[in-house]
Image (cartoon, rainbow, N blue to C red):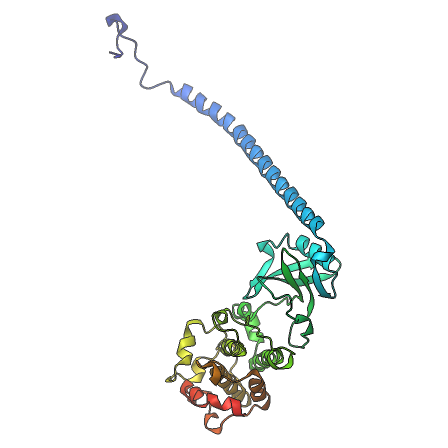
Length: 341
């Protein structure tokens, strides 16, 4: 059944197995002529759909922000200093598109930091806080080594701080930029460490109530929040400045009491070696770092003691040797002297 063949035998005529090439060519030309308009039409429709979707998204976001702004009443705010609370809150919402991730420039233990261009006021860093005590008096913080804080807004929906924006970013970003690394010679690195030490000493010892920063390095968030937690994190930063990178997995290595590695082997090799007179500063930085990284918190120095040691630049005589002769073991042996300098 269904077999084709000669009609004289009562079979259905078979179709030719090799159709006319000319007819195939004509069919291909016809298909090609219709393909381009179809593709253009499909692309135009797709573009229209994307444009409509984008427009709807923008309109909805603007309406959402406008509605959020209208819902805000001045009595909902606790604010201090230079900014009017309601205006600042609305400006920040619009500038960051309701704290959209694309404006986020950093994340820390207390919150996320956003870049915000506030119309008529300039560009600022906005720290959106994960949590914050309403009675925490940050208004009293005034120090040349601490970024200027312009304002604080508290609302039922969120709390944030308004800071000056430091354009050049963090140390971590600088370590990955070969040109910027070269700018940080050893004298500048010593100054950076000194400024951080003074800022922490101010927070710990010169404020009415001691303030634990906690946000110097994220490993620190797992510790009990005391001043000695900041001291440990400071030690990590000092090693980072000396090495030109975060010590990371090497931290347990530095905490060992038996080491035969030489000091020169951990120094950042991307910049010129220190002069003979500056070698003493590097030795002091590493000694301070080891003192701050001691496992027992009570054994670590206070930030006041660290500042005193960095300011006097005095060292135990036995450790004053050329860098290629000093082993890391010696820093463990003498790190307890920092408290007595």
